[in-house]
Length: 222
Image (tube, rainbow, N blue to C red; front, side, top):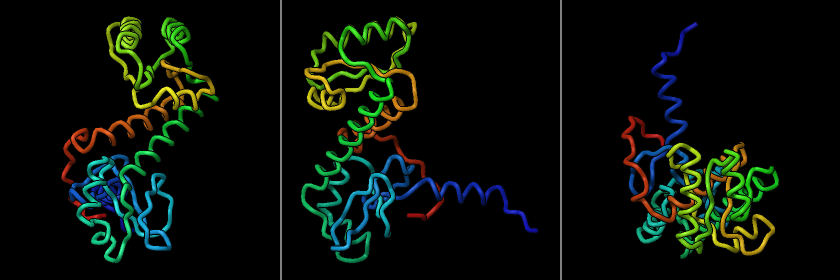
């Protein structure tokens, strides 16, 4: 029986994990892009979970790239047919990413992998359980610096990520509490999913400049 060359296996694996951005034409890992499909009415629909049927078009997961796709009518060209991309699609994607991050935070709360409130965060830091801090976007810089310094001191000077994509209201929605300013993610799989979702949202809002230069892979898979 003929053996498949290891190089060919590697090429197939690469093709399954990267896609080409329809605006920049750069190849990127799939987790750095957003998939879009056409709905039955010909409207462009974001497919964040990559499960909707039909041919997909991929864009770098950056708000300015989605806005550029709208300006350049890139969806119609990529789908090779009429595609109605609604104005404000970039804002719609932002809302969906925010909802996904809030949902992940809520699930982490139910799993006991997040604590809310300044005192609870200090206690979790002291116990060495924190993998990341969460500060509301409205949080005062002084309070954030104090908690960041406490965590850095506990970790021997090592800086850990701090999430600042949620508003006070969004933290309240995820926690079931009011006026939540600070939170901490505790070791566990649900907490890691919060970090991934929040990082995706933060990069999207920062725009394409937040992404590293893509590797120029030798594949035409789109």
